[in-house]
Image (cartoon, rainbow, N blue to C red; front, top):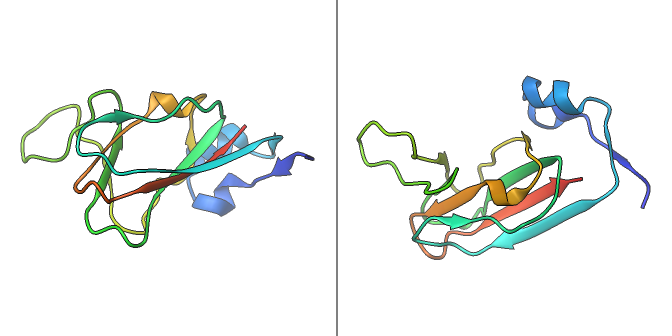
Length: 119
């Protein structure tokens, strides 16, 4: 497959990621769906340079994406609460070398997450 050129600034409006990946070509595109989980779960090992997570449009609750031991909001100040994604929302492009650096936890077991990873 020929390299796929992506203009991150146009795709997501995230300027930091745009500077990192401006005019980059990607040889491999990975995509998948991750089932909802009520406990913190590590994303699968998928090599990449950029990833974008999206909560499915039909989710009832939120999904929280973060680091190891990610938690749901509980009204207390902490360093583990994940980035909240409601139904249909996405993270924008995140520069990371492997999906397994990210973790997720969901409000409901049926709240699924999809991803698109560029390598």
